[in-house]
Length: 347
Image (cartoon, rainbow, N blue to C red; front, side, top):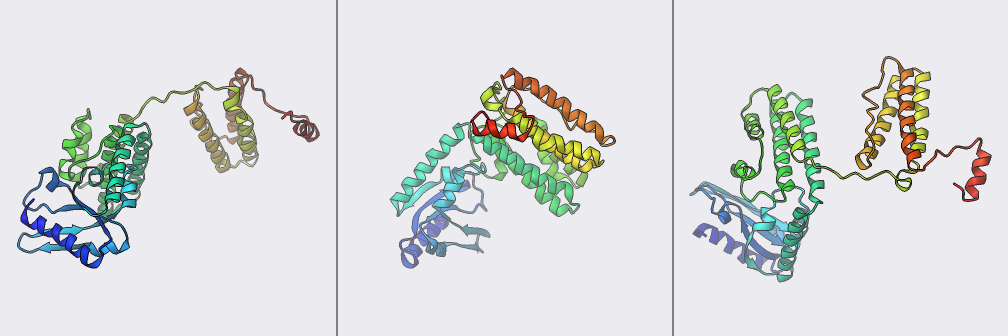
């Protein structure tokens, strides 16, 4: 460690003893100084872990004129590290790799060690795939901003969010995280079998001066990563126990509303209700071994009456699945018969 960095760290410890003696838990070093990837203008990345609000008195930012290096002394709480351990991004080096050089609170240090183990287990578990999906959804939200606005500055900021979220998704998918800075992002991604087109498109986005090209490239990298991280989900067979009530729900919630919409020649209502039914169909077919029915691909905006037939056609097919599970649609000639069965526990 060089003289300047040592002096800065010593000053933090000295100030803590003076202004907030019970607030500083530990100090660690991460980033380029810790990995040996520093250059002449590298700053010092510190994990300054504090116990309480008073510890924020240790935080500051400054520039040294003789070296022209800027420093940001940022304080972190254990709650912040707990959040990091949930792997909402792949930038976990502060949590995982900080070289601890000073410990005042050993209880906090032990929790840090536990959080590191927890994070390792998470990255090895199937739970990480939920984070991957969340990161891709985050990229899509940023992509929407790229498409909605025409201000180049705003578009560039949003498309950067797209790229970084996708890079995070790839790392978490592989059960790892970024250990080095942005300048090494492609080096770290190169350990995986990514198509060169993907990394080339990432670089092209940063170089582009054309809004339409940026949008096109952003779309391509999202679709690429979505396919790259896709995984086969083992579906289960539908049974009497796990799909009971779904036919009745479809019928009561949407079938009659589609019929009513056709009577009023209300395309919007027909559209919305059939989309709602499509969501339910998609959810069911993603879990069970059931053929997917493309309700909305067959939607007829020019002949609303036809949409009733489309819904009925699906419900007839779904009834066959129901019957195959020894399930039969519950129907009653009138409410009195239903009430009698319901009270007697036959429903």
